[in-house]
Image (cartoon, rainbow, N blue to C red; front, top):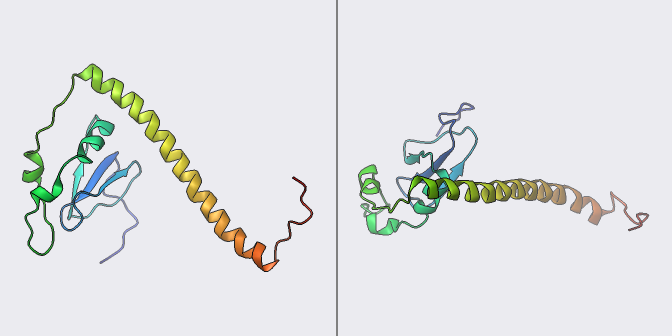
Length: 135
């Protein structure tokens, strides 16, 4: 219900809603502000943790009657099979490079969509003429 231009999180984090939107996992690699209605997850094994969080059955942990609710205690009860450190490191390297490519492509897609949304009305209205362009 307010606004801030400052971040309360500066690390690479994973976030899920504690109330209402639990099970929606968001990745943040840049400074952000998380509310007190979120669970903030940090891990040296960021990609592995992200994959685990996407496979949890959050509906089975629901404590709310009107609005879904999940607690840290609920999350602490989730049993996770963790591989050895060598396997984790290999996974982090592989998955991290894939996600870095995905994020770069996603950023390019956002820029291209913005460019399209700016140019298309101008092309349709005739404000920009491209009839002399030879391809």
